[in-house]
Length: 445
Image 1 (cartoon, rainbow, N blue to C red):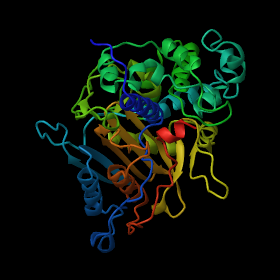
Image 2: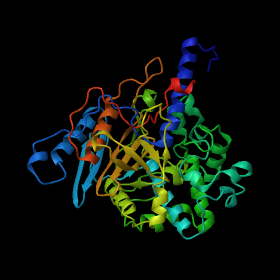
Image 3: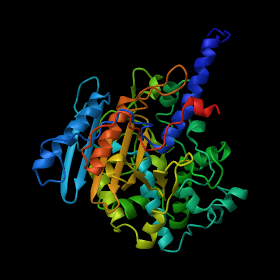
Image 4: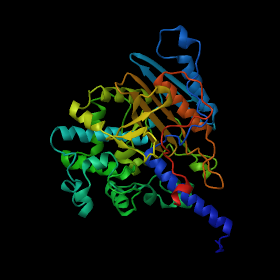
């Protein structure tokens, strides 16, 4: 290899890629919510919405999911429920080379939705008196989280991401800042131990001080090790026996290998255009995500899970109340309403189609796979979606995000599906969800 002095253009590209890699870190940490929806198209009104007693407008749901595919998403599959009524749909392809279509029953990597399961497991131990929500984590894991952090960071702070502990993703994949494709290829079969992930997170600079919400996967790796300490079981085994099986889920599991066991789509990662064409990462060692994001599930299972959780079948009333005690997910501008709040592995959102209603759930993102699940507070109306192209967003030369029709279509589908409100799109409407993707401009501040 020749050793040459980088040109100013190369330097600018590297700086921009480093900033986008940091943006990707946050995207992986908190999942897949679109940064904005200036062109969001809510669930379209159809004749069936006014001529049938059904609460599920199947024609409108199908059209909205197809719009998500037409906007550029390779493939998507979704389940929507209202009471005992159910609709399942799929649009697009599972394999861009063969054209194999996606199916509504596909298994899928659900990323950070795993955190809800892990939080339920921890709260079960809270109910048994083995864990104190406001006890310092150092009381349980002094060697893992030593010193002031061990004394000051509580279990609650881990679960609501106010611990001030940084995320480990970028330290675990340092080449994301220079060559994302190489970074992900080299990590495909790499085994990472939970304690090593925690060490990387503790050594990194936090994004916010303790007490302020700043999403970090490290928090939930620590929560998994806390479960291991108090139960004597591997956390994945404990969650499987006491959360997944208790909820009656048949297609939700921690993978035993690098592969998804059941029928599934290929999972394509674009990394904001730096991996071009988008590359399939459906075969991957998920030890890098663990109790923060390694679960596989289906959209039907996710709806079952959140309905049983929100209806009080997985936790006692006191623990569910703690889970739904939230903190703001973003700092509002003066006079701005906070419309996204984070509890203990569960968040609440206000969406335009809901007329001021709060919806509960979580989203998730791993390399190549995105998932989003939302429910009404009583769990009656629900939607879950999985899709197989990630970091489809693009940045301009100025480092600012370009218009995002895919994210807008996703937001429009979810808003209409969970609210059941067919509304006309407002040309200037923007997503009330705070940006989950930090731009390079923001990172330079």
